[in-house]
Image (spheres, rainbow, N blue to C red):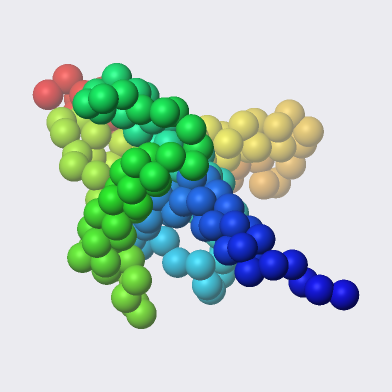
Length: 185
């Protein structure tokens, strides 16, 4: 039983390499360049790995379509618009190489991850997420206390719960006013 001719083997390897170049490599390199702090080990590695693979596939398809479109309309002498066209593969390899170089410069392949980049905060944005979460937590605690007071309005703990409820409402209102003032400035 023979394993196939060397020509068939080369053609098969070429198909695998071409498929990876069309559907994975450019997107993976771009993903690593944009998110160099993502690691595929440690806690959450499975989730992060799945995110990376999906993003790499989607970005590779987008880059392939964009590169094909640009070649179709911008290449002198036309473009054959075939998946196996060497010009398309060269463009995708160039994109992947440039993105991998940027990723390496950003520290994506280093043993220790680079620090996560914080987005530039404009006026009214600094800490907005944390402030919103704190206001939400206070609202949840407020609703919980109101439910407990409805169930036992005359218990010994009701006085303490009422005091805590007033404190929560006061702090929540202060934070909402601070948030509104920050957005106005």
